[in-house]
Amino acid sequence: MDVRTTTGIVRGYQRNNMMCFLGIPYAEAPLGELRFKRAVPKKPWDGVYEANRIVNRSLQVFMGQVMGSEDCLYMNIKCPLSVEADGTDRKLPVLFWIHGGGYNTGGMEDETTNGACFVRDGIVFVEIQYRLNLAGFFDFGVLPGCEFVESNRGLSDMITAIQWMHENIAAFGGDPDRVTIMGESAGGAAVTTLMAVPSVKGMFSQVIAESSLPNCVQSHEVAKTLLYAWMKENNWKEADMPDLIQGDLVPLVLSAEYIQHQSQDIDPGTLLPCPCIDDLLPEYPIDAIANGCARDVRLILGTNLHEGTMFVNPFMHVFPNSWEMIQEMFQKAGYEERFEGVKAYYDRPDVRYPEEISPFVNFATDYAFKVPGTELANAQSKYGDTWLFHYEFVAEGALRQHMLASHAFELAFVYETYDASMPWGSLYDTPVEIKENLADAMHGSWVNFIKSGAPSDNWPKMTGYNTPIRIFDKDTTTRQEDRSELMKLWEGMRFFR
Image (cartoon, rainbow, N blue to C red; front, side):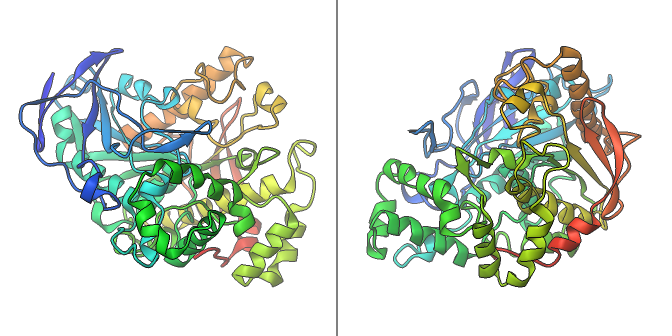
């Protein structure tokens, strides 16, 4: 099947009961003079582009080895075999997926998030790749001699991809006026960040943010702190950096793992390199959304009960894992007088899992995900319909692994891929009926929202900090939950701005 786009003819192929257009370039390859520059829209090509290949992921470290390529700015579009909806020629709704991975890892064609179930249900599925870690988010432009490096390169990739999709999705049977952007983890942070990006305003009308980190946006000063710590670890001077970053990035990407593993020792509570405040993103997302920048955008946002088990465990600590670390974090931010109150709130046995969950897991869950997510959702609820969810299903395998309802575990049910490898074998002994019911509840709600603008008749909209919340568990229910005490505890505190 050939489709004519603004950049040329794209040829797709039937695959797994879908029409697939794989590896469409939406921007020029960020190589040569374009390296460390923001995305440049793809120039038109001659002839037919054979969209039948799985492309390299962005340059990254996986299992201790560097993989991927700097040439990574591509998207996949997957469509139903017929573009007709309900027997008419009406265009189909679009789901635009942004993968997670801490702005550090990940890519397209992941078996857990392949999008096939959405296409089966009459939705055009789009997934993109964007530059990660050094190539995409390290803010080298703050260093002397590196002023040629443009900021927010990875964010500019997402912006350029949305713009290409908006111009061309109708040719693939999609409706540019019915676009939902969705992401999880860093992808969830990306979609809430994009709500505050002026250049894509009006190009999507709905957002699904799973395990978003709304405060995953840094100032140039915070970015500089991380860079100088990394430079110190490698005995590099300012004068070394212009030549280093214009050379082979592979050894630099490997050495940058230091930031991922030691960030909490550098500055407890800090996040990995991520989007920064600049002309593309002039205001912190929570502040911009509170001021109405995303008026009329409908939002589903939620977190998992035990996000922190992924990040505070014997193998890693991406967030603080001691009260000394947390006290240092509060001191540096100027909130030392509030530390004892926070410590008293979290330094007690977990109500449901006292043996498995440390206070630092719950602290990380609230600090990075639940509190800022609730604040952002509450802000958006003043301007557009907003729904909150909480994923609470603990499989027996996940309990044995001490992961419980951990970060990213809901994806297996949103995408109906619970028989795939993720979440790390924790679902293999879960009864099929439980998995099917949970997938029906989550995936079904997402499909309803994408198609109709509302997830479910019995899932009420958000009503402030004392609000109905959809609980996804063995039995899906709606629970009235008062988060007022939690939000009061954290009120007004801003870290790493």
